[in-house]
Image: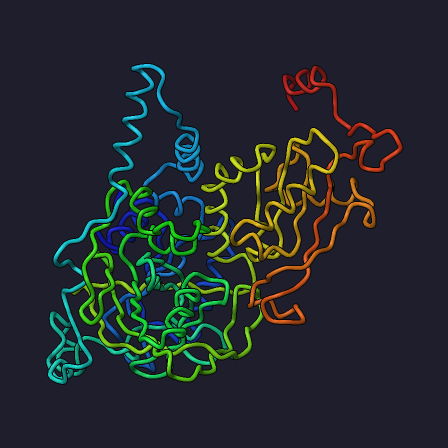
Length: 506
C-alpha cells in the first residue's frame, strides 16, 4: 500500500487504534521526549503520538509532530501496507529464490513477480505537494508574505515558510548541544557515477540556515562527501521529512552500496515513487514529501563541532567535528506533519526499525549462509552491540565461519558481540539465549577475539571508529572442535505425557 502523505499514514494508524492524539500544547524542548520515552517503554512499543499543538520557545507552530510511528511490529507492518513484517519478508524470500521458468505455469508466476517489480523504479514528475509552499533563501520577498492558510492565531505574525528556527525541531535530552532533526532522509549523489544514496544522519541546528551533518565515516553519504572534498566542489544535499513511511525505513536499511533506497521503497509500497527536482540544486526528492530542506556542504569550509547528543547507545555522544549543511530552500505541503523520533536507553522506536530490517533481509543472509536459521538484535544491544544467530550445525567450526562472514557484511561490521546458537533456540527469546550461552560454553575455548571497524557512537572503544569484537560459539560441541566428552541431552518431557496432561483439566 502506498501512502500519499505522512498524514495518510497517521490516519491509517488512527483507524487501527495505534495512535494517541495530544491536543494540548507541548514543548519541543524536552517535554515531547518525556512523553515519547514513556510511551516507547510500554509493552510492545506503546502507541504512536501526534502532538497537535507543538511549541518552540513557548510559541505555537502550525506543523503537528508525529513520534513513535514505527515503534511496534503492528505499525511497522502498517507502514508496508501488510498484515505482518513476516509476510513482507516471505515475499522477498520468494523473490530471492526466483529461477528461470521451466514451464508455462512457472513463466506466469515469474511474470507476476516482474509486474510487481516494474512499480519499483522511481519516475520523475514536474511538481508535487512538497512544493505547495516554496521558500528560497535567496528571495528576500518570501520573508515578508503571510503564511498561506495559516490559522487565525498565526496569520500575519510569522514569515512564511519557516526557517529552521520555527520548525518544531526537538531538543531531546537535557545535555544535548541544541535542537536535532532526528528522522531526516538525507539525499546525496556520487559525483562520479551519479548513484543516489538516501541515508539517515542526525542534524544539529546551528542557526536559521545551517546545521551539522553527522554522517559517520563508514556511511555512504560520508563517502560521497569525501569525493567532493577531494575535488573542492560544492556538494548538493537534500533532506526529506515525511511522505511515505517507507522512506525513513529504507534510509536506515542495510542495503548494498549502490542499490537505490527509493527503488526498495517503491517495491515495499508497490508503487513507483514520483520524484521532483529541487528548487536550488539538481537532486530529486519524493513529490509527496511533507517537508524538503535543500542545501549544500562547502568542502572549503572548516568542520564544526557537533553535539553532545543523547544517542541510541543510551549515553551522550560527545562533540566531534562534522561538515556544515547550509540551507538554500525549504519547501513543504500546506498541511505538513513533522516526523521525529528519539533515541536513548532501550527499548526505543529504533529497535523495531532495526529488527524489521533483519527480518526483511534475512533471505539475503541465507543466500550467503544457508545454515542460518534466524537472526535477532536484542533491544539491549542497541542495534549494533549484540547479534544472536541460530544455525543448523553440520560440521566443526561452522559457528566461526558464520561469525567471520557476518562481520564482513555491511553494517554487521559494527557488531561487538556475536553469539551463535543451535537451530532449536529461539533467538528472539533472550532468556533462552542466555541459558544456552551459559550452559554450552567454556569461555576460553568457545570465544574468539578480533578487531575491526566499530560504530563511531560507541564511547567504550579506545579509538573512534575501531575496536575489538567477540564471537561466542554457544552451539553443541562436536569432536572435531576439541571436545572429548559426550554431549548430554537437554531435559525434555515425553510428548505422549505432555499430550495426556494437556487433555486433562487443570
